[in-house]
Length: 185
Figure: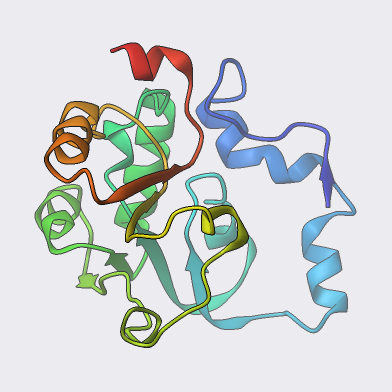
């Protein structure tokens, strides 16, 4: 649905009030829309965004889960309001699902009732069976190491450079949003 006010991690849309109540400006209204689709109540309410804590009150549910892929507080732009909303969400849900074992302790210290670690998974056959090379990599005959994701303070460009220097036979492909300032740092 369209929302006249949508949450964002930039001022002023990062305020806790926007994160908690933006859905009130959604058109069509979310709850009547869901009720018409047969969602009066759900068995498991699964949340994976700090932008949608309202579902805990809006949608009757038997159990609630919040999935955490990273410690969001470590990302630039994830300000105090978003941290406060996320910590409240973590304390309210029945279970927090973490994508890595190292997240268990920080989430428990934030007041999670239960933390289940379910690491991100892969389909190993993609790496054990020959796959056609994507069009954009056809000009490279050797192996290619591919990184797909965000670039932030955690990404070690110096280490990447050292690896590229030490392994000249290996091509490196980086896929994700990047700005020139990150390359110069």
